[in-house]
Length: 160
Image (cartoon, rainbow, N blue to C red; front, side):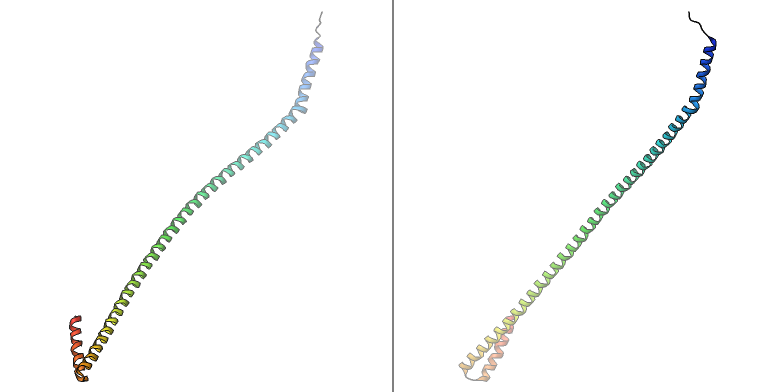
């Protein structure tokens, strides 16, 4: 049969309690300390990574905002450049039209002046030819001068 020895059981229980206390003091506490240290390191690293990620996200948002601002500025600058170029174009076209009109007026005035000179020159030549013809026909210069005056009066009235 099996006999139960209370002294053996008691010493076994005491040994187990001593081993439990020894393990707890020498084994579990250092391991728990190491685990807590590692957990603290992991938490610190996690917090650092989270902070870095938040910083990276804020930098990304700042970058995107700056890109949007730069894009807006680019559009504004292009719009202003287009307006300025259009204004300059209109100014150049207007100046060219004014210059063309001035040149046209000058050409018309020069043509009128030349026409008047040609008509005046033609009148003088015709008058001289009439005087010469009259001189040849009549034979005296005095009659030629009178005829010249009459012809000038005739041309003056005809021109009016």
